[in-house]
Image (cartoon, rainbow, N blue to C red):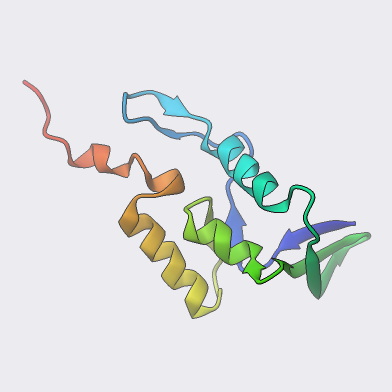
Length: 115
């Protein structure tokens, strides 16, 4: 069974982000590592929202009291999906404001250009 987490747009596994040193870093792989750390050997419960195909569902999943979608967005490892609940979109904006996860290098655009 493949479960797609509801209300988020995950980073693609091969997605890259700008590094503070120039160049890029594998933020998609880092997002996957973050999710793996949340799941590890813990019990995950999912509530099916809809069927997406054979053995594929869209679901809201939790590890105890932790909402996996909200946690990924809160730490900048996923974006809020269009139509996501307001608490998810607020977490996405806070992650961007705090420059965490994939946003951690966004400040580079604000540096003055050298002559």
